[in-house]
Image (tube, rainbow, N blue to C red; front, side, top):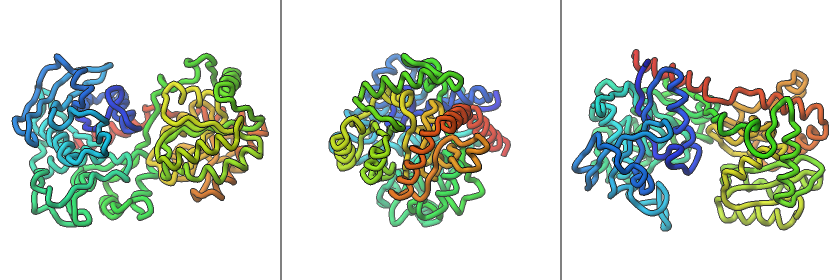
Length: 476
C-alpha cells in the first residue's frame, strides 16, 4: 500500500446523490485502489443513511458538536469503506442534503462545519488505528476541513481541495467566525475574509496544500473573472499548486455493448439503429435527419435558454430533439412549449430517470451541451461512449474531452464531435447546421462515431494523476 486518503464530501454514490459530485466521490476509491492507495469516505449520516447504518460500530465521538453529540460510524457499502458522521441534530431531517421544502437549511454553515471539523480530527489523529496521509476535501461543504488542519494542527496530514463547481461557495456571515471555530486573526482578505463575510470554499482554497479542479481547462478558466465568480484572484495567487484532473466514467455502468435490448459496439452499430427506432417510437418522434438529445439540469448555466432560438431551424432542416431534465420553471415551460409547437419532431420529459437517460444515449445521434461554463461534464463523455456525438460549447471539460470537427480533424479521422464558441444562439445554430450536414454524410459521421467510441474515458488516467498528487504530498 502506497498510502491512505480520507475523502470528505456531502454526497457519494451509491449512498446519496444530487449531482455529478456524488459520482466522482463514489468512483475514486475503487480507481485509486488500483494505484495502491486506500481511500475511505466521510459523509453526513442523513436520515436515509442513519437507517442504512444500523449496527455499524462507533469509532469516534464528540460530546458537543455544534450543540449535540456527534459520532462516527464505520461500515462498508458495495465495497466502499464509509465513515458516517451521525449527528441527528444536524442531519436527521426530511428533504434533501442541503434543504427542505422552504429552501436551504439556515444552519448549513454549522452543519458542514461539523463535517469538516470531524474530517480534520480524523485526519489529524486517525480513527480506529487508521491514519490518513492525505485529506481530500470536495467543494464548499468540505472547504473548512483544510482550514481546520491549518489553524488547529494537521498531525502531519496534508490536504487537497477539489473544486467541482466554483459557483457554489458556502457563504456565511462574518459574525459566525467564532461559532465556526475559526480564528479572528485570519479574518482578512489574504485568508478567510470574503467580501465582508466568509466563504467555506475560499477557506479551503487558501489553506489546502494542493488545489485541483475537474478538468485542466477549468483550472485555467477559474483564474479569469468571467469564470472565477469572485474567487479568480484567490486561484491565481495559488496558481503554482493548482492543477486540473479530468473526471472519468464508470465503464461498467455506461456500456453500450452490454446493456439494453439493442447492444452495439463501434464495430457493429446495428444495435444503435434499432435503439433509435425504439426511442423514436417511445416519444413519438420521427425525423429523417439527426435525432439529438439534451439530458441536463434546465438552467441558464447549461445554455438551455438558447434552445428556443435554434430548435426551429433544426426542425426545418429535418432534425429532432428529445429533452430530459428539470430546473428553472421558466425553462421547463420553454422546453414543453417547443414540444407542443413541433409535435413529432420535439419531445420533452420534465424530471430525471436514470434508465431513460441510458436509452436516450443509446438511441440518439447527438447530445447537445451548450453550457456557458462546465467544470468537467459527464454528459459529453456518455455521448462519446455511445457514439452519440457531442455538440458542445468550447469551455471547461467540454473543450478538454471533445475534438471538434474541423477540416484538419476530419481529414485525420480524429474528430469526435462539434465544438462551438462563443456560447450564444448564433454560434450554437451554426454548430447545429454543421451537425445536420455531417449526419447526411454517412461515411464522415461513422468515422466520427468510431473515433468517439475509441476515446479513453475510464478512471485509469485520472486515478494515476491523483495518485501522483498524493504521493508528492506524502513525500513533501
